[in-house]
Length: 69
Image (cartoon, rainbow, N blue to C red; front, side):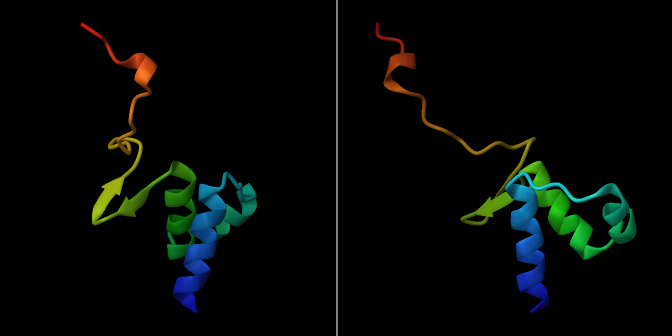
């Protein structure tokens, strides 16, 4: 149940949802705040690799970007 709540808070942040400042101050330093903040900042894990702002998810470049020699 706790894990489900943390996931919902994370997804709310990941979806761009903001929490009111008074609420963030109330939950500051808790697992709820950390879950929301990680989602809001775009952190996620896939296949055991963690991605975020400093380590972005690799994306394929479109064909038009490739240099043809």
